[in-house]
Length: 269
Ligand SMILES: C[S@@+](CC[C@H](N)C(=O)[O-])C[C@H]1O[C@@H](n2cnc3c(N)ncnc32)[C@H](O)[C@@H]1O
Image (cartoon, rainbow, N blue to C red; front, side, top):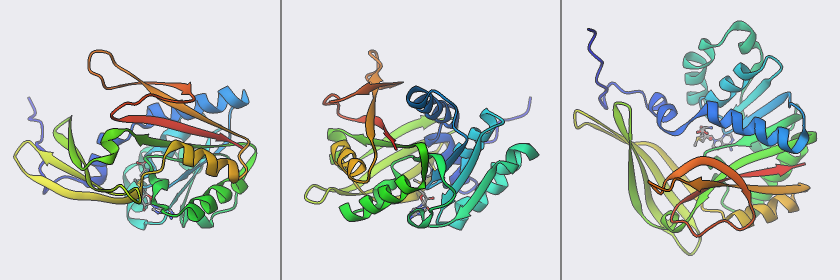
């Protein structure tokens, strides 16, 4: 019987580990489709994935339906190149022809007009100032077709305001999410991702983020100011036995005082 390869920090690929540990493109594309169908009653055509990184989400999106197209936008050429080599190359010629990749600042992209813009894994929290976030939301609003929709995620709860490391077991390695610093007076936070392996080796600081912890209410107010007609929150339910999130998101107005929560934000043009 072939021996399973052991991953070690030296041999591991940080983008591969990130995709395995953090992303769930099947689930996320399904959620996006549901949100659009719920509010618009039809299928979208063109989706823009902002802060796309290795654009695994868009690759899954074009696989879902032959009428789906995706535009992936990221500033950094490194994850984009990685995505071309490891994700795009696995698609059929037809699927590949429905993906466009742009190395660009999300603040600068205006065309083409799209049905959906997504900003996942809290990437839009790189904008620290209210005016900057408003500028981003306005530019997204202007990029949308009349029936367009902007979908983001957000997190919060008591734990989001603390400094801690949270390990989670994945297949062949542990994913460690660290809140290295949290500054209560300006809500800025420094987060890092580390990976540890069965042989005891550790890949520290594989990814670093400097974000502002925005509250959903601040985001709602900014989206409304940017001209979005309707803003909805979808709150994740809790698994009774484990107290962990159960992957079921329901529309909510107020939420609950959980130690750690995740929600989707859906803004309709
Ligand atoms: C947390 S990763 C997101 C990866 C992936 N989309 C996900 O959901 O996990 C954030 C990405 O945002 C990109 N980024 C940061 N600022 C940006 C900007 N102003 N315009 C475009 N991309 C940006 C970074 O290069 C990085 O690849």
